[in-house]
Each structure stands twice: as C-alpha cells, then as structure tokens.
Image (cartoon, rainbow, N blue to C red):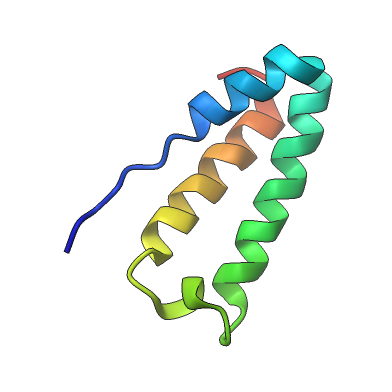
Amino acid sequence: MIHKETNERARIERVIEKEGVDGAIRWARRTAGIYRAAVLDRGHFAHAGACRRQFIKAYLELKRFAARGTL
C-alpha cells in the first residue's frame, strides 16, 4: 500500500496568497468540515478506505490552522 502524506500546508499557502489569512481560515474551516463529514459517513470511501488516515491528518492540519491562523 502506498501512503501519501497530506500537504495541506501548501494548499493553505496558496489560499493565503489568493484570499489572505482571513479567507484561508474560512476555507480551512469549510474544508475541515467536508473532510470530517466524509470520514464519519459510512457510505463514503473515506470512512473505511485506505485513505482514511490521510483524511484525518488533513482534517487535523486544517483545524489547527483555523484555530491559530498560522502555519
């Protein structure tokens, strides 16, 4: 099995460049909610699939950024 590390930092940096920190925080909160819902949805591949761990790691990275506003 191939494990990919999440790279939410790069995504957050791109959003900061386009929308500023406040926009990136809003984006991170929204995206974290989507990831969380996917992991909790028994019908979604992220619930039990091989990428569940990556979804959870990405969710945590996004939540951390949204709470602190810094990378």
